[in-house]
Image 1: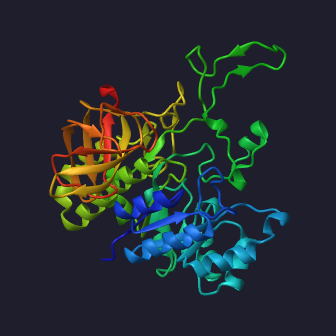
Image 2: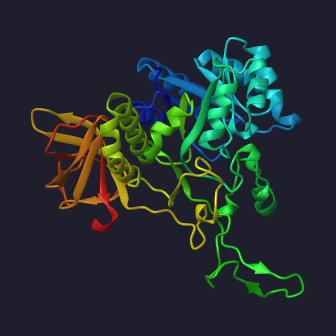
Amino acid sequence: MNKVELLAPAGNLEKLKMAIIYGADAVYFAGERFGLRAGAGNLTLQEMEEGLHFAHSAGAKGYLTVNIIPHNYHLKGLDSFLTKAAEAGVDGMIVSDPGVFRIVRQLLPQIEVHISTQANTVNYMSAEFWHSLGAKRIILARELSIDEIGEIRSRASQELELEAFVHGAMCISYSGRCLLSNYMAGRDSNLGDCAHPCRWKYHLMEEKRHGEYFPVYEDEGGTFIFNSKDLCMIEYIPQLIGCGLSNLKIEGRMKSSYYVATVVKAYREAIDTWYENPEEYNDSKGKWLEEVSKASHREFTTGFYFGRATKDTQIYDKSSYIRDYDFVGLVMEYDNRTGVATVEQRNRMFVGDTVEITGPGRDFFVQTIEWMKDADGNNIDAAPHPQQVVTMPVKHPVKPFDILRIPAAAE
């Protein structure tokens, strides 16, 4: 049995590297144009080349998102951009628009083309349509159940790969084609510039009672009627594999490096454990759920996987994230002789703080920061400056890109 591919978001070069170090089989990213996350750092062509070299050296792949819904003027420069991205070494291109699909197939017939979830593929005939034109993979719409995916798998060509999102934020228009941002903020979500008005607070106003705002739900403070919970399927890896998915995708190109590392690490361990020891997987699901909960998130849902989404899929009383942990440091170097780590600060930390230190392929350990020194070797009590470089002793050996985090309650 071929193991499913785990895909991770790479909003910038650091996130790309973190994703691969923490266990992703592939990353997906955008260039500076034509992707649906205009607010992410995204990659220049030079960064794309560096990132792809890093990925390929680790045996991983990199897919370029070219999934905007373009108007005529957006096509200007697309040919040149695609050619340069192919020269940089991308392993595939993710598209949603038939015109962009045609351009990629004609210009770069050797490149794999993956059909974005934006294309809203919800049945086997649509899947076969795209496959007949040369698509290698379908990223299925988020409105599908496990059973529906299983039927698509049984009826579509076995050469066609099926991918689906299994973790991360969901928008009110689940497969992503939404005009709410255009209307409310003049920012086009289909061109990567969504203002996320689905997370805003709403009241109901009757047409002839201007200025009288009624709550849509019982809470008199208002309601966030469009605010979806976050998808989390880490407890259902066997079902995802069993229905025929070959590629499991994590959402989050706008999220932090800490989010990427934490979530990828948990899914990597869960997937590997299922293949190696299903009984151990069933015993450890709670541990991995707890781990992904240490990254910033909303309440979790299984979306449409086990039937239609219900009122319980939405969050009505707030739009904020749950942040139980703060990412405070990233290991840069470790001296085996002295047991001292060089750490780049990511949030304020103090001598005396109790931190968790985690890295790919192993459990975290807990310790107190006994002392810290700045870059000049001076003893310091706190590291308050963004990306300040400090040294500190650690209880166990660590490696570059290991993470230091502090429970929020410890602040």
